[in-house]
View 1: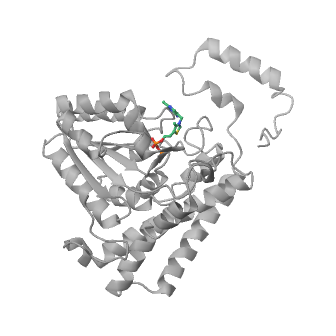
View 2: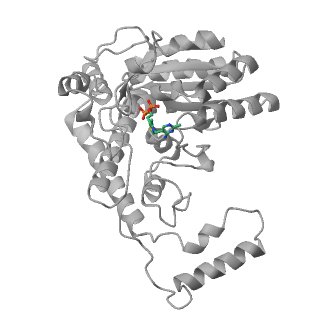
View 3: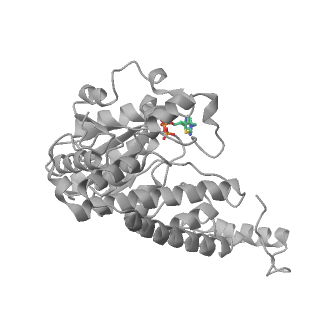
Length: 366
Ligand SMILES: Cc1ncc(C[n+]2csc(CCOP(=O)(O)OP(=O)(O)O)c2C)c(N)n1
């Protein structure tokens, strides 16, 4: 397993990255931003202002370290647990909040579960609810890129549970056979909902499975942002040089619940949670920055206050944005309007009384 920073924030292997002060500070700030967003999302759900969310607390290094190593031209095939990858690519939490509220400014027009982002402008494919399906999608896009001689790659993010799906086998097998530029990024966060990793596979690791597909496999400390950045950058380089696909297994821990509907105390101990808390990726990076003499409490406070201000503003904007008009249900289906759908839309308008009550508020209580 590649590790550059240990849990105490000490450098355990030589890397030029550790001398790049601006880059290290930036990685820390982005991880902090993800947590600010994540904490706000769970709090919104607990207050009944949004219906659902999937916290990614504890997995910030995995999200930011990998996102920072990609090109903006690469295609991302995400899971619901990488909002940080979207935040990094988009640069603003506002579109994420529009999506959580499912309002009229949501790019998916309120048709997806919260946390299921999609944004073509930053090549962030729609989050798949069926676990693992993004893996085969990434292989397909990587194959297309190879045929077109397009120097991009496709990256699929998924959890350890997804490695037990048919799509994992089909996607990695075909990627190996076709030698396509795909990175398969597995966040081994120790649980697939309530199923612990050791009940998921008898294999010694997930990275080891790469050998069976004839592709490169690498294991990394997923709570070490410098190591994650390094392995993802190397994997991307391998893809761009025509070396074929890479499977990355990032060892990490989902510190929070699987989703806002889950209570992890039913299936794991407080002692286990406490042990992982000390390996927290933000804590580790802060310890490293402190040891380099690059951190101060005042600096982190200014980062915190700026980011929480931006997130709170975005929440206010998203919450005030009205829901999508009911008529939008009939859009984005055909390239051209269909008379049959127009008739159905008219029927819906009549049954909802839309023509009589134009200004009615169609927000439904949660
Ligand atoms: C094909 C399929 N089976 C089951 C589910 C229900 N389900 C949703 S998330 C989840 C756990 C996935 O765990 P993992 O792949 O390890 O990702 P993590 O949630 O830990 O990030 C399950 C079983 C689903 N959405 N799709």
